[in-house]
Amino acid sequence: MQNRTHNCGELRLENAGEKVKIVGWMENVREVGSNFAFVVLRDFYGTTQVVIENEEMMKRIKGINKESTISVEGLVRERDSKNPKLPTGEIEIVPEKIELLGRCRYNELPFEINRSREADEATRLKYRYLDLRNPAVKQNIILRCAVVADIRRRMTERGFLEMTTPILTASSPEGARDYLVPARKHPGKFYALPQAPQQFKQLLMASGFDRYFQIAPCFRDEDARGDRTPGEFYQLDMEMAFAGQDDVLQVLETVLVPVFENFGLYGKRVTPAPFRRIPYREAMERYGSDKPDLRIDLEIQDASALLQEIGFEPFAGQTVKAVVVSNFNATRKQIDKLCADVEVQTAQKSYWFRLDENGEIVGGIAKFIQPVKEQVIEALGLQPGCFVGLAAGKLAVAQKTAGVLRTKLGQLCPEHMDKEQYQFCWIVDFPLYEIGEESGELEFCHNPFSMPSGGLETMEKAERGEIDPLSIMANQYDLVCNGYETASGAVRNHDPEIMIKAFEMVRLGEEDVKKKFPAMYNAFCYGAPPHAGAAPGIDRMIMLLTGEESIREVITFPMNQRAQDLMMDAPSAVTRKQLDELHIAITAQEEE
Image (spheres, rainbow, N blue to C red):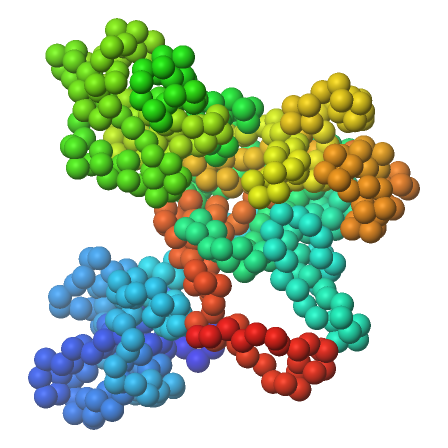
Protein backbone atom coordinates (compact mmCIF):
# COMPACT_ATOMS: atom_id res chain seq x y z
CA MET A 1 0.00 0.00 0.00
CA GLN A 2 1.92 3.02 -1.25
CA ASN A 3 1.87 5.99 1.18
CA ARG A 4 -0.66 4.28 3.49
CA THR A 5 -0.85 1.35 5.87
CA HIS A 6 -4.56 0.67 5.35
CA ASN A 7 -7.39 1.81 3.10
CA CYS A 8 -10.50 3.60 4.32
CA GLY A 9 -12.69 0.51 4.25
CA GLU A 10 -10.29 -1.85 5.98
CA LEU A 11 -9.84 -1.02 9.67
CA ARG A 12 -11.78 -3.05 12.25
CA LEU A 13 -12.03 -3.32 16.02
CA GLU A 14 -9.06 -5.71 16.13
CA ASN A 15 -6.89 -2.84 14.80
CA ALA A 16 -7.57 -0.75 17.95
CA GLY A 17 -4.31 0.48 19.47
CA GLU A 18 -2.41 0.43 16.16
CA LYS A 19 -0.75 3.45 14.59
CA VAL A 20 -1.90 3.75 10.99
CA LYS A 21 -1.79 6.03 7.99
CA ILE A 22 -4.77 6.42 5.68
CA VAL A 23 -5.35 8.70 2.68
CA GLY A 24 -8.37 9.89 0.74
CA TRP A 25 -10.85 12.66 0.08
CA MET A 26 -12.14 14.72 2.98
CA GLU A 27 -15.82 14.01 2.49
CA ASN A 28 -17.27 15.89 5.43
CA VAL A 29 -16.38 17.87 8.58
CA ARG A 30 -18.80 18.20 11.49
CA GLU A 31 -17.61 20.62 14.17
CA VAL A 32 -18.98 19.95 17.66
CA GLY A 33 -16.97 22.51 19.63
CA SER A 34 -14.06 24.89 19.29
CA ASN A 35 -11.53 22.05 19.34
CA PHE A 36 -13.67 19.03 18.58
CA ALA A 37 -14.83 17.72 15.19
CA PHE A 38 -15.63 14.56 13.25
CA VAL A 39 -14.01 14.17 9.82
CA VAL A 40 -15.11 11.54 7.28
CA LEU A 41 -12.29 10.37 5.01
CA ARG A 42 -13.26 8.50 1.84
CA ASP A 43 -11.23 6.52 -0.67
CA PHE A 44 -12.06 3.90 -3.32
CA TYR A 45 -12.65 1.23 -0.65
CA GLY A 46 -14.86 3.01 1.87
CA THR A 47 -14.93 5.63 4.63
CA THR A 48 -13.26 6.03 8.02
CA GLN A 49 -14.10 8.47 10.79
CA VAL A 50 -11.33 10.73 12.11
CA VAL A 51 -11.86 12.52 15.45
CA ILE A 52 -10.25 15.93 16.02
CA GLU A 53 -9.67 16.57 19.72
CA ASN A 54 -7.09 19.36 20.00
CA GLU A 55 -6.44 22.90 18.84
CA GLU A 56 -3.50 22.04 16.58
CA MET A 57 -5.42 19.46 14.52
CA MET A 58 -8.48 21.73 14.44
CA LYS A 59 -6.44 24.55 12.89
CA ARG A 60 -5.10 22.13 10.32
CA ILE A 61 -8.55 20.96 9.27
CA LYS A 62 -10.14 24.43 9.18
CA GLY A 63 -7.90 25.50 6.31
CA ILE A 64 -8.90 22.59 4.08
CA ASN A 65 -11.98 22.54 1.81
CA LYS A 66 -14.13 19.46 1.45
CA GLU A 67 -13.07 17.06 -1.34
CA SER A 68 -9.41 17.93 -0.86
CA THR A 69 -7.16 14.87 -0.58
CA ILE A 70 -5.32 14.42 2.69
CA SER A 71 -3.30 11.85 4.63
CA VAL A 72 -3.99 11.11 8.28
CA GLU A 73 -1.55 9.41 10.64
CA GLY A 74 -2.78 8.46 14.07
CA LEU A 75 -4.05 5.89 16.56
CA VAL A 76 -7.00 3.57 16.00
CA ARG A 77 -9.43 3.33 18.88
CA GLU A 78 -12.86 1.86 19.59
CA ARG A 79 -15.77 4.23 18.98
CA ASP A 80 -18.08 5.12 21.86
CA SER A 81 -21.02 5.51 19.47
CA LYS A 82 -20.76 2.71 16.94
CA ASN A 83 -22.34 2.74 13.47
CA PRO A 84 -23.42 -0.82 12.50
CA LYS A 85 -24.24 0.33 8.95
CA LEU A 86 -20.55 0.95 8.16
CA PRO A 87 -17.85 -1.75 7.89
CA THR A 88 -15.53 0.62 9.78
CA GLY A 89 -18.28 1.75 12.17
CA GLU A 90 -16.70 0.31 15.30
CA ILE A 91 -13.48 2.31 15.14
CA GLU A 92 -12.16 5.83 14.64
CA ILE A 93 -8.73 7.42 14.24
CA VAL A 94 -7.29 10.07 16.54
CA PRO A 95 -4.82 11.96 14.30
CA GLU A 96 -1.27 12.89 15.22
CA LYS A 97 -0.50 14.30 11.77
CA ILE A 98 -2.67 15.59 8.92
CA GLU A 99 -1.07 16.42 5.57
CA LEU A 100 -2.73 18.15 2.62
CA LEU A 101 -2.07 16.19 -0.59
CA GLY A 102 -4.33 17.85 -3.15
CA ARG A 103 -6.27 21.02 -2.40
CA CYS A 104 -9.85 21.52 -3.58
CA ARG A 105 -9.78 25.22 -4.49
CA TYR A 106 -13.54 25.70 -4.52
CA ASN A 107 -15.67 26.37 -1.47
CA GLU A 108 -18.80 25.26 -3.34
CA LEU A 109 -19.12 22.03 -5.35
CA PRO A 110 -21.43 21.65 -8.39
CA PHE A 111 -23.35 19.07 -6.36
CA GLU A 112 -23.05 17.13 -3.14
CA ILE A 113 -20.93 14.10 -4.01
CA ASN A 114 -23.08 11.47 -2.29
CA ARG A 115 -26.23 12.94 -3.90
CA SER A 116 -24.83 13.56 -7.38
CA ARG A 117 -27.50 11.41 -9.02
CA GLU A 118 -30.05 14.02 -8.00
CA ALA A 119 -28.27 16.70 -10.07
CA ASP A 120 -29.32 17.44 -13.66
CA GLU A 121 -27.63 15.27 -16.27
CA ALA A 122 -25.75 18.08 -18.01
CA THR A 123 -24.04 19.06 -14.74
CA ARG A 124 -23.22 15.45 -13.95
CA LEU A 125 -21.65 14.91 -17.37
CA LYS A 126 -19.66 18.15 -17.23
CA TYR A 127 -18.25 17.22 -13.83
CA ARG A 128 -18.20 13.48 -14.42
CA TYR A 129 -14.95 13.09 -12.43
CA LEU A 130 -16.84 14.39 -9.39
CA ASP A 131 -19.93 12.33 -10.18
CA LEU A 132 -17.77 9.20 -10.24
CA ARG A 133 -16.56 9.93 -6.70
CA ASN A 134 -20.08 9.01 -5.55
CA PRO A 135 -19.78 5.36 -4.41
CA ALA A 136 -23.24 4.61 -5.82
CA VAL A 137 -22.16 5.81 -9.27
CA LYS A 138 -18.74 4.19 -9.04
CA GLN A 139 -20.32 0.82 -8.21
CA ASN A 140 -21.75 0.47 -11.72
CA ILE A 141 -18.28 0.91 -13.23
CA ILE A 142 -16.77 -1.58 -10.79
CA LEU A 143 -19.47 -4.09 -11.74
CA ARG A 144 -18.73 -3.48 -15.41
CA CYS A 145 -15.05 -4.31 -14.85
CA ALA A 146 -15.94 -7.52 -13.01
CA VAL A 147 -18.39 -8.63 -15.71
CA VAL A 148 -15.93 -7.99 -18.54
CA ALA A 149 -13.20 -9.92 -16.69
CA ASP A 150 -15.61 -12.81 -16.13
CA ILE A 151 -16.65 -12.87 -19.79
CA ARG A 152 -13.02 -12.86 -20.90
CA ARG A 153 -12.29 -15.83 -18.65
CA ARG A 154 -15.29 -17.80 -19.85
CA MET A 155 -14.54 -17.17 -23.53
CA THR A 156 -10.88 -18.12 -23.12
CA GLU A 157 -11.86 -21.34 -21.32
CA ARG A 158 -13.90 -22.27 -24.39
CA GLY A 159 -10.94 -21.95 -26.74
CA PHE A 160 -11.56 -18.44 -28.05
CA LEU A 161 -8.54 -16.23 -28.76
CA GLU A 162 -8.82 -12.55 -27.84
CA MET A 163 -7.65 -10.60 -30.88
CA THR A 164 -7.79 -6.90 -31.74
CA THR A 165 -8.89 -5.51 -35.08
CA PRO A 166 -8.18 -2.10 -36.70
CA ILE A 167 -9.87 1.12 -35.62
CA LEU A 168 -8.98 3.03 -38.79
CA THR A 169 -10.56 1.20 -41.70
CA ALA A 170 -12.61 1.68 -44.85
CA SER A 171 -16.15 3.02 -44.97
CA SER A 172 -18.72 0.33 -45.75
CA PRO A 173 -22.53 0.23 -45.85
CA GLU A 174 -23.45 -1.51 -42.58
CA GLY A 175 -26.70 0.19 -41.64
CA ALA A 176 -25.62 3.30 -39.73
CA ARG A 177 -23.65 6.47 -40.47
CA ASP A 178 -19.88 6.21 -40.33
CA TYR A 179 -17.55 8.46 -38.40
CA LEU A 180 -15.04 9.57 -41.02
CA VAL A 181 -11.38 10.43 -40.41
CA PRO A 182 -9.53 12.46 -43.07
CA ALA A 183 -6.31 10.90 -44.36
CA ARG A 184 -3.59 13.59 -44.30
CA LYS A 185 -1.30 11.74 -46.71
CA HIS A 186 -4.14 10.96 -49.12
CA PRO A 187 -5.98 14.23 -49.87
CA GLY A 188 -9.71 13.81 -50.40
CA LYS A 189 -9.79 10.31 -48.94
CA PHE A 190 -11.07 9.17 -45.56
CA TYR A 191 -10.77 6.37 -43.10
CA ALA A 192 -13.87 5.28 -41.20
CA LEU A 193 -14.13 4.18 -37.59
CA PRO A 194 -15.62 0.65 -37.62
CA GLN A 195 -19.31 0.29 -36.94
CA ALA A 196 -18.32 -3.22 -35.83
CA PRO A 197 -15.36 -5.54 -36.56
CA GLN A 198 -17.68 -7.49 -38.88
CA GLN A 199 -15.45 -7.84 -41.94
CA PHE A 200 -12.25 -8.30 -39.95
CA LYS A 201 -13.61 -11.16 -37.86
CA GLN A 202 -14.84 -12.92 -41.00
CA LEU A 203 -11.41 -12.42 -42.54
CA LEU A 204 -9.87 -14.02 -39.45
CA MET A 205 -12.01 -17.09 -40.10
CA ALA A 206 -10.81 -17.13 -43.71
CA SER A 207 -7.24 -16.81 -42.34
CA GLY A 208 -7.49 -20.10 -40.47
CA PHE A 209 -8.26 -18.95 -36.92
CA ASP A 210 -10.92 -21.12 -35.37
CA ARG A 211 -12.44 -19.08 -32.51
CA TYR A 212 -12.08 -15.32 -32.09
CA PHE A 213 -13.41 -12.77 -29.60
CA GLN A 214 -12.72 -9.28 -28.35
CA ILE A 215 -14.36 -6.62 -26.21
CA ALA A 216 -14.67 -4.43 -29.26
CA PRO A 217 -15.28 -0.68 -29.53
CA CYS A 218 -17.83 0.18 -32.21
CA PHE A 219 -18.52 3.63 -33.65
CA ARG A 220 -21.85 4.70 -35.12
CA ASP A 221 -23.13 8.20 -35.76
CA GLU A 222 -26.59 7.46 -34.35
CA ASP A 223 -29.08 9.38 -32.27
CA ALA A 224 -29.18 8.55 -28.57
CA ARG A 225 -31.98 6.84 -26.67
CA GLY A 226 -32.31 5.30 -23.24
CA ASP A 227 -30.68 1.99 -24.20
CA ARG A 228 -28.25 3.30 -26.83
CA THR A 229 -25.43 5.77 -26.47
CA PRO A 230 -24.36 7.94 -29.41
CA GLY A 231 -20.81 7.76 -30.71
CA GLU A 232 -19.20 4.63 -29.36
CA PHE A 233 -20.23 1.47 -27.57
CA TYR A 234 -18.64 -1.87 -26.71
CA GLN A 235 -19.65 -5.39 -27.60
CA LEU A 236 -18.48 -8.93 -27.00
CA ASP A 237 -17.57 -9.66 -30.59
CA MET A 238 -17.15 -13.37 -31.37
CA GLU A 239 -16.89 -15.66 -34.39
CA MET A 240 -16.49 -19.42 -34.93
CA ALA A 241 -15.18 -21.28 -37.98
CA PHE A 242 -16.83 -24.47 -39.28
CA ALA A 243 -19.82 -23.60 -37.14
CA GLY A 244 -23.52 -22.88 -37.49
CA GLN A 245 -26.34 -21.27 -35.58
CA ASP A 246 -26.64 -23.96 -32.89
CA ASP A 247 -22.93 -23.70 -32.06
CA VAL A 248 -23.04 -19.94 -31.52
CA LEU A 249 -26.25 -20.02 -29.50
CA GLN A 250 -24.93 -22.78 -27.25
CA VAL A 251 -21.70 -20.87 -26.51
CA LEU A 252 -23.48 -17.63 -25.66
CA GLU A 253 -26.04 -19.39 -23.48
CA THR A 254 -23.31 -21.12 -21.44
CA VAL A 255 -21.33 -17.87 -21.10
CA LEU A 256 -24.12 -15.40 -20.36
CA VAL A 257 -26.40 -17.35 -18.01
CA PRO A 258 -23.72 -17.57 -15.25
CA VAL A 259 -22.88 -13.88 -15.77
CA PHE A 260 -26.49 -12.88 -15.12
CA GLU A 261 -26.81 -15.35 -12.23
CA ASN A 262 -23.64 -14.10 -10.54
CA PHE A 263 -23.89 -10.36 -11.18
CA GLY A 264 -27.59 -9.64 -11.75
CA LEU A 265 -30.18 -8.10 -9.46
CA TYR A 266 -32.39 -11.17 -9.38
CA GLY A 267 -29.88 -13.87 -8.44
CA LYS A 268 -30.69 -17.21 -9.96
CA ARG A 269 -33.92 -16.02 -11.61
CA VAL A 270 -32.47 -16.31 -15.10
CA THR A 271 -33.95 -18.25 -18.01
CA PRO A 272 -32.17 -21.62 -18.04
CA ALA A 273 -30.48 -22.70 -21.26
CA PRO A 274 -31.42 -23.60 -23.91
CA PHE A 275 -33.43 -20.43 -24.49
CA ARG A 276 -36.71 -20.44 -26.34
CA ARG A 277 -36.39 -19.77 -30.08
CA ILE A 278 -39.12 -17.67 -31.67
CA PRO A 279 -39.28 -17.09 -35.46
CA TYR A 280 -39.38 -13.40 -36.36
CA ARG A 281 -42.82 -13.51 -37.94
CA GLU A 282 -44.28 -15.35 -34.95
CA ALA A 283 -42.75 -12.76 -32.61
CA MET A 284 -44.33 -9.92 -34.57
CA GLU A 285 -47.72 -11.65 -34.67
CA ARG A 286 -47.84 -12.67 -30.98
CA TYR A 287 -45.90 -9.83 -29.35
CA GLY A 288 -45.76 -7.01 -31.92
CA SER A 289 -41.98 -6.77 -31.56
CA ASP A 290 -38.79 -8.53 -32.58
CA LYS A 291 -37.54 -7.90 -29.03
CA PRO A 292 -40.50 -9.02 -26.91
CA ASP A 293 -40.47 -8.65 -23.15
CA LEU A 294 -41.47 -12.15 -22.08
CA ARG A 295 -41.85 -11.11 -18.45
CA ILE A 296 -45.26 -9.88 -19.65
CA ASP A 297 -47.82 -12.70 -20.02
CA LEU A 298 -50.01 -10.81 -22.53
CA GLU A 299 -50.26 -11.77 -26.20
CA ILE A 300 -51.69 -10.02 -29.25
CA GLN A 301 -54.77 -11.41 -30.98
CA ASP A 302 -55.98 -10.73 -34.51
CA ALA A 303 -59.40 -9.08 -34.57
CA SER A 304 -59.48 -8.01 -38.22
CA ALA A 305 -62.34 -10.29 -39.32
CA LEU A 306 -64.40 -9.21 -36.31
CA LEU A 307 -63.88 -5.46 -36.40
CA GLN A 308 -63.05 -4.31 -39.95
CA GLU A 309 -66.72 -3.83 -40.85
CA ILE A 310 -68.26 -2.43 -37.65
CA GLY A 311 -68.57 1.09 -39.07
CA PHE A 312 -65.56 2.52 -37.22
CA GLU A 313 -63.58 4.32 -39.90
CA PRO A 314 -60.02 3.71 -38.56
CA PHE A 315 -60.69 -0.05 -38.76
CA ALA A 316 -62.24 -0.16 -42.24
CA GLY A 317 -60.17 -2.45 -44.47
CA GLN A 318 -57.29 -2.47 -42.00
CA THR A 319 -55.53 -5.11 -39.95
CA VAL A 320 -56.87 -4.84 -36.39
CA LYS A 321 -54.91 -6.22 -33.43
CA ALA A 322 -56.19 -6.65 -29.89
CA VAL A 323 -54.49 -6.98 -26.49
CA VAL A 324 -56.74 -8.40 -23.77
CA VAL A 325 -55.97 -7.72 -20.10
CA SER A 326 -57.92 -9.52 -17.38
CA ASN A 327 -58.76 -7.98 -13.99
CA PHE A 328 -57.97 -4.51 -15.27
CA ASN A 329 -58.35 -1.86 -12.57
CA ALA A 330 -56.76 1.22 -14.14
CA THR A 331 -58.54 4.57 -13.97
CA ARG A 332 -59.75 6.55 -16.99
CA LYS A 333 -56.88 8.98 -16.41
CA GLN A 334 -54.39 6.10 -16.60
CA ILE A 335 -56.02 4.77 -19.77
CA ASP A 336 -55.86 8.19 -21.44
CA LYS A 337 -52.19 8.49 -20.52
CA LEU A 338 -51.56 4.98 -21.82
CA CYS A 339 -53.08 5.83 -25.22
CA ALA A 340 -51.20 9.14 -25.35
CA ASP A 341 -47.89 7.41 -24.58
CA VAL A 342 -48.51 4.84 -27.31
CA GLU A 343 -49.22 7.62 -29.81
CA VAL A 344 -46.04 9.50 -28.84
CA GLN A 345 -43.94 6.37 -29.35
CA THR A 346 -45.59 5.07 -32.54
CA ALA A 347 -47.28 8.12 -34.13
CA GLN A 348 -50.40 5.90 -34.26
CA LYS A 349 -53.62 6.07 -32.27
CA SER A 350 -54.78 3.19 -30.11
CA TYR A 351 -58.34 2.42 -29.07
CA TRP A 352 -60.06 0.54 -26.27
CA PHE A 353 -63.17 -0.76 -24.58
CA ARG A 354 -63.96 -2.77 -21.45
CA LEU A 355 -66.24 -5.60 -20.46
CA ASP A 356 -67.55 -4.50 -17.07
CA GLU A 357 -68.48 -6.72 -14.13
CA ASN A 358 -72.05 -6.91 -15.43
CA GLY A 359 -70.92 -8.20 -18.82
CA GLU A 360 -71.59 -4.91 -20.62
CA ILE A 361 -69.29 -3.30 -23.21
CA VAL A 362 -68.33 0.17 -21.93
CA GLY A 363 -65.84 2.98 -22.54
CA GLY A 364 -63.73 3.99 -25.54
CA ILE A 365 -65.28 2.73 -28.78
CA ALA A 366 -67.93 0.65 -26.98
CA LYS A 367 -70.81 1.91 -29.18
CA PHE A 368 -69.14 0.45 -32.28
CA ILE A 369 -68.48 -2.88 -30.56
CA GLN A 370 -72.02 -3.25 -29.17
CA PRO A 371 -73.59 -4.72 -32.36
CA VAL A 372 -71.01 -7.55 -32.43
CA LYS A 373 -70.74 -7.88 -28.66
CA GLU A 374 -71.32 -11.64 -28.40
CA GLN A 375 -68.97 -12.50 -31.26
CA VAL A 376 -66.23 -10.32 -29.79
CA ILE A 377 -66.59 -11.80 -26.30
CA GLU A 378 -66.38 -15.33 -27.70
CA ALA A 379 -63.55 -14.71 -30.18
CA LEU A 380 -61.34 -12.82 -27.72
CA GLY A 381 -62.21 -15.00 -24.74
CA LEU A 382 -63.39 -12.05 -22.65
CA GLN A 383 -64.48 -12.31 -19.02
CA PRO A 384 -66.08 -9.59 -16.89
CA GLY A 385 -63.40 -7.09 -15.86
CA CYS A 386 -61.38 -7.45 -19.09
CA PHE A 387 -59.84 -4.47 -20.89
CA VAL A 388 -59.22 -4.62 -24.64
CA GLY A 389 -56.63 -2.39 -26.26
CA LEU A 390 -56.79 -2.08 -30.06
CA ALA A 391 -54.47 -1.00 -32.86
CA ALA A 392 -55.18 -0.75 -36.59
CA GLY A 393 -53.40 -0.10 -39.87
CA LYS A 394 -51.39 -2.01 -42.40
CA LEU A 395 -50.08 -5.30 -40.99
CA ALA A 396 -46.65 -4.07 -39.85
CA VAL A 397 -48.08 -0.83 -38.41
CA ALA A 398 -50.84 -2.63 -36.52
CA GLN A 399 -48.40 -5.19 -35.15
CA LYS A 400 -45.88 -2.64 -33.92
CA THR A 401 -48.52 -0.36 -32.39
CA ALA A 402 -50.11 -3.32 -30.62
CA GLY A 403 -46.63 -4.36 -29.46
CA VAL A 404 -46.07 -1.01 -27.76
CA LEU A 405 -49.59 -1.20 -26.31
CA ARG A 406 -48.85 -4.69 -24.95
CA THR A 407 -45.62 -3.53 -23.29
CA LYS A 408 -47.20 -0.49 -21.66
CA LEU A 409 -50.19 -2.50 -20.46
CA GLY A 410 -47.82 -5.01 -18.89
CA GLN A 411 -45.96 -2.21 -17.12
CA LEU A 412 -49.28 -0.78 -15.91
CA CYS A 413 -50.54 -4.12 -14.56
CA PRO A 414 -48.08 -5.73 -12.09
CA GLU A 415 -50.04 -8.99 -12.05
CA HIS A 416 -49.24 -9.44 -15.76
CA MET A 417 -45.52 -8.60 -15.53
CA ASP A 418 -42.98 -10.40 -13.34
CA LYS A 419 -40.21 -7.81 -13.16
CA GLU A 420 -37.95 -9.73 -10.79
CA GLN A 421 -36.25 -11.95 -13.38
CA TYR A 422 -34.18 -12.04 -16.55
CA GLN A 423 -36.23 -13.55 -19.38
CA PHE A 424 -34.15 -14.54 -22.41
CA CYS A 425 -35.20 -15.76 -25.83
CA TRP A 426 -33.76 -16.00 -29.31
CA ILE A 427 -35.52 -14.38 -32.26
CA VAL A 428 -34.62 -16.41 -35.36
CA ASP A 429 -35.45 -16.64 -39.06
CA PHE A 430 -35.38 -12.95 -39.93
CA PRO A 431 -36.35 -11.85 -43.44
CA LEU A 432 -33.27 -11.25 -45.56
CA TYR A 433 -34.92 -8.32 -47.35
CA GLU A 434 -37.48 -5.60 -46.69
CA ILE A 435 -38.93 -2.64 -48.56
CA GLY A 436 -37.08 0.47 -47.41
CA GLU A 437 -39.30 3.11 -45.79
CA GLU A 438 -37.49 5.96 -47.55
CA SER A 439 -36.43 4.31 -50.82
CA GLY A 440 -39.53 2.19 -51.40
CA GLU A 441 -37.19 -0.41 -52.88
CA LEU A 442 -35.83 -3.78 -51.80
CA GLU A 443 -33.11 -3.46 -49.14
CA PHE A 444 -31.29 -5.76 -46.74
CA CYS A 445 -33.39 -6.12 -43.62
CA HIS A 446 -30.83 -6.96 -40.95
CA ASN A 447 -27.32 -7.87 -42.07
CA PRO A 448 -25.97 -7.99 -45.63
CA PHE A 449 -23.39 -10.65 -44.72
CA SER A 450 -25.92 -13.30 -43.64
CA MET A 451 -26.42 -16.63 -45.39
CA PRO A 452 -29.90 -16.88 -46.95
CA SER A 453 -31.83 -19.95 -45.87
CA GLY A 454 -31.67 -22.44 -48.70
CA GLY A 455 -28.41 -20.97 -49.99
CA LEU A 456 -27.78 -20.71 -53.71
CA GLU A 457 -30.94 -22.60 -54.71
CA THR A 458 -33.15 -20.04 -52.95
CA MET A 459 -31.35 -17.10 -54.54
CA GLU A 460 -31.65 -18.64 -58.02
CA LYS A 461 -35.39 -19.15 -57.53
CA ALA A 462 -35.75 -15.49 -56.57
CA GLU A 463 -33.64 -14.51 -59.56
CA ARG A 464 -35.97 -16.44 -61.88
CA GLY A 465 -39.05 -14.88 -60.25
CA GLU A 466 -40.26 -18.17 -58.81
CA ILE A 467 -40.38 -16.81 -55.28
CA ASP A 468 -40.83 -13.35 -53.79
CA PRO A 469 -37.52 -11.98 -52.45
CA LEU A 470 -39.45 -10.77 -49.37
CA SER A 471 -40.14 -14.44 -48.53
CA ILE A 472 -36.43 -15.28 -48.25
CA MET A 473 -35.35 -15.96 -44.70
CA ALA A 474 -31.83 -15.42 -43.41
CA ASN A 475 -29.86 -17.45 -40.89
CA GLN A 476 -29.88 -14.53 -38.47
CA TYR A 477 -30.64 -14.45 -34.77
CA ASP A 478 -31.03 -11.90 -32.01
CA LEU A 479 -30.75 -12.52 -28.29
CA VAL A 480 -33.46 -10.66 -26.37
CA CYS A 481 -33.61 -10.06 -22.62
CA ASN A 482 -36.50 -8.27 -20.88
CA GLY A 483 -37.48 -6.44 -24.05
CA TYR A 484 -33.97 -5.37 -25.05
CA GLU A 485 -31.93 -6.70 -27.94
CA THR A 486 -28.75 -7.81 -26.19
CA ALA A 487 -26.98 -9.59 -29.07
CA SER A 488 -27.24 -9.93 -32.80
CA GLY A 489 -25.60 -12.50 -35.03
CA ALA A 490 -25.81 -14.71 -38.08
CA VAL A 491 -24.48 -17.61 -40.04
CA ARG A 492 -22.29 -15.75 -42.53
CA ASN A 493 -22.48 -15.83 -46.30
CA HIS A 494 -19.03 -17.25 -47.11
CA ASP A 495 -19.74 -18.20 -50.74
CA PRO A 496 -18.86 -15.46 -53.30
CA GLU A 497 -21.46 -16.75 -55.78
CA ILE A 498 -24.29 -16.56 -53.23
CA MET A 499 -23.00 -13.17 -52.05
CA ILE A 500 -23.16 -11.74 -55.56
CA LYS A 501 -26.73 -12.96 -56.08
CA ALA A 502 -27.81 -11.58 -52.70
CA PHE A 503 -26.45 -8.13 -53.54
CA GLU A 504 -27.87 -8.19 -57.06
CA MET A 505 -31.32 -8.24 -55.47
CA VAL A 506 -30.61 -4.80 -54.00
CA ARG A 507 -29.26 -3.45 -57.30
CA LEU A 508 -25.55 -4.00 -56.59
CA GLY A 509 -23.61 -6.05 -59.14
CA GLU A 510 -20.43 -8.09 -58.85
CA GLU A 511 -18.20 -5.08 -59.48
CA ASP A 512 -20.00 -3.14 -56.73
CA VAL A 513 -19.40 -5.97 -54.26
CA LYS A 514 -15.73 -6.21 -55.22
CA LYS A 515 -15.36 -2.46 -54.78
CA LYS A 516 -17.20 -2.20 -51.46
CA PHE A 517 -15.84 -5.39 -49.87
CA PRO A 518 -12.62 -6.16 -51.75
CA ALA A 519 -10.76 -8.01 -49.01
CA MET A 520 -13.67 -10.19 -47.94
CA TYR A 521 -14.75 -11.05 -51.49
CA ASN A 522 -11.21 -11.99 -52.52
CA ALA A 523 -10.54 -13.94 -49.31
CA PHE A 524 -13.68 -16.00 -49.86
CA CYS A 525 -12.54 -16.79 -53.40
CA TYR A 526 -9.53 -18.59 -51.86
CA GLY A 527 -11.74 -21.02 -49.93
CA ALA A 528 -13.42 -19.91 -46.74
CA PRO A 529 -14.87 -22.10 -43.99
CA PRO A 530 -18.55 -21.90 -43.08
CA HIS A 531 -18.63 -19.59 -40.07
CA ALA A 532 -21.02 -17.88 -37.71
CA GLY A 533 -20.89 -15.40 -34.88
CA ALA A 534 -22.66 -12.82 -32.77
CA ALA A 535 -22.03 -9.73 -30.68
CA PRO A 536 -23.72 -9.13 -27.30
CA GLY A 537 -23.66 -5.46 -26.30
CA ILE A 538 -21.58 -4.91 -23.15
CA ASP A 539 -23.12 -1.53 -22.23
CA ARG A 540 -26.69 -2.78 -22.57
CA MET A 541 -25.87 -5.96 -20.67
CA ILE A 542 -24.48 -3.95 -17.74
CA MET A 543 -27.57 -1.72 -17.85
CA LEU A 544 -29.74 -4.82 -17.41
CA LEU A 545 -27.55 -6.22 -14.64
CA THR A 546 -27.69 -2.98 -12.65
CA GLY A 547 -31.36 -2.22 -13.33
CA GLU A 548 -30.51 1.25 -14.66
CA GLU A 549 -32.95 2.92 -17.04
CA SER A 550 -30.28 4.95 -18.87
CA ILE A 551 -27.26 3.35 -20.50
CA ARG A 552 -25.20 6.43 -19.61
CA GLU A 553 -25.23 5.31 -15.97
CA VAL A 554 -22.96 2.35 -16.77
CA ILE A 555 -20.43 4.12 -19.04
CA THR A 556 -17.40 5.76 -17.47
CA PHE A 557 -17.42 8.92 -19.58
CA PRO A 558 -20.65 9.05 -21.61
CA MET A 559 -21.77 11.64 -24.12
CA ASN A 560 -25.07 13.45 -23.82
CA GLN A 561 -28.04 12.86 -26.12
CA ARG A 562 -26.59 15.24 -28.72
CA ALA A 563 -23.34 13.24 -28.92
CA GLN A 564 -21.41 15.90 -27.01
CA ASP A 565 -18.76 15.30 -24.38
CA LEU A 566 -19.53 18.20 -22.04
CA MET A 567 -16.52 17.43 -19.86
CA MET A 568 -13.94 17.54 -22.67
CA ASP A 569 -15.93 20.02 -24.81
CA ALA A 570 -16.07 17.69 -27.79
CA PRO A 571 -16.70 17.98 -30.63
CA SER A 572 -14.79 21.24 -30.80
CA ALA A 573 -13.42 23.62 -33.41
CA VAL A 574 -9.88 23.10 -34.70
CA THR A 575 -7.36 25.52 -36.15
CA ARG A 576 -7.13 26.56 -39.78
CA LYS A 577 -3.65 25.02 -39.87
CA GLN A 578 -5.04 21.62 -38.87
CA LEU A 579 -7.74 21.84 -41.52
CA ASP A 580 -5.25 22.88 -44.20
CA GLU A 581 -3.02 19.92 -43.38
CA LEU A 582 -6.01 17.66 -43.92
CA HIS A 583 -7.09 19.46 -47.12
CA ILE A 584 -10.49 20.29 -45.57
CA ALA A 585 -12.56 23.43 -46.04
CA ILE A 586 -15.55 24.19 -43.84
CA THR A 587 -18.43 25.53 -45.93
CA ALA A 588 -20.97 26.01 -43.11
CA GLN A 589 -20.50 26.61 -39.41
CA GLU A 590 -23.04 25.34 -36.87
CA GLU A 591 -24.59 28.11 -34.84
CA GLU A 592 -24.56 27.46 -31.10
